[in-house]
Amino acid sequence: MAGFGLPPDLANQPQGFTTTPRTQITYFDIATRSYFQVDASKYVGSFWGSHDIKGGYGIIKNVNRVDVSYPGEGYVYVYWNQLFTPTGALNTPVRGTYGYYEVDNIGTRGSTGGTMNSLYLQDHWRIHPRVSLTLGLRTENEHVPSFIRSIRNDAFAFGFQDKISPRVGISWDVLGNGKLKAFGSSWFLWR
Figure 1 (cartoon, rainbow, N blue to C red):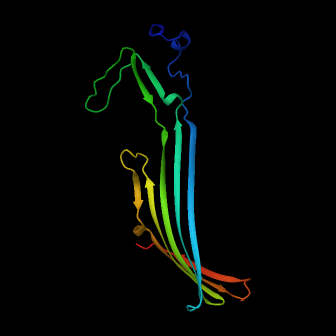
Figure 2: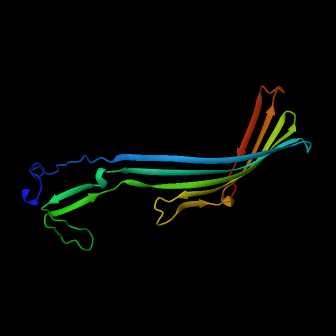
Figure 3: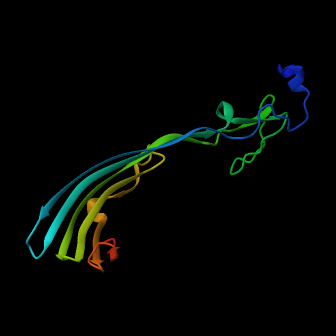
């Protein structure tokens, strides 16, 4: 093996010898979230009780950058003086000058991100001094990214019409002094 130009300390090793541990390293795995929200409210009285009407718009951007891989861009298996037998139609054994090699560069590398826009409108309606209803509607426009954008940019995409969510709630001031409140709420996805 010394004739292959290898240093003697590497050439005279037993089968299965390695110079690098076969362990993937997490060089970085960074997840970031950017968020912007704007809300507005308007108090309106004397329409069958008082109303606190709120509305808003928000956007969330998630990004994940990752490199979890073998050091040196891969792990190389060297099969000195051995034949390689491919699978499939060409199953005839082949051999290079010194044998053959295999590169394992499997890892998770890249960057991807998705966005979600949201809109909502809500009315906090005080129908009695001790009873309030909350009625609202929320919708979202969401893009879930593909990890192979050269094939497809979005793995999933939902428009505002796909994610409409009505919300209903009721609140009762049991004692009339603000110290004990009973409430219930519900929301569901409307399709």
